[in-house]
Amino acid sequence: MRLYVKNMTEKFAAEILSWKYTKPYDFYNSELTSEALSEMLEESYFALVDSDDELVGFFCIGESAQVPAGNPFGAYNKGCVDIGIGMKPVLTGKGCGYEFLTFILSYVQQNFPDQAIRLTVATFNKRAIHIYEKVGFTKEKAFHTEAAEFITMVKQVN
Image (cartoon, rainbow, N blue to C red):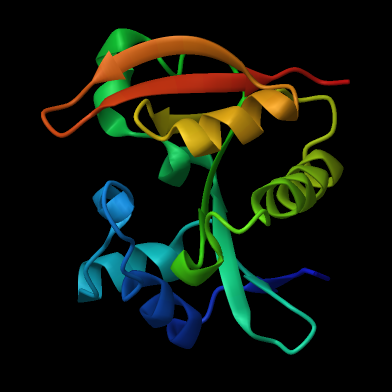
């Protein structure tokens, strides 16, 4: 699958906010609200499309990728580029994750050379953690919210 980075548009953001994942991944479901739409349009969010210009996922960079509850635990003290990612629900669990993630990492490394990359993931998401470890991320900090337990994972500069 050929992937392309596009600027986030209202159409892409509305589609992403309407995605519905099955259990236990429904934890990642969002609601289409004006506040959520504004965040995706005003912050560092990018759409990923295929060669037919169909939306397949998104990623964000910076504070938008952090879970605020991690701050008191020192989860974001170390200087890294934070990323958050999301793949269209119908594509998850189909073996596309590795290609999807490596494409995003390549883009981030080109735009933030010589910086380690950090992401935050819910600990129940074993599927994602497996792929993150496969591409060189290592577990760093653990913290929890009322909704879930999280870990940060860091990929050092090659």
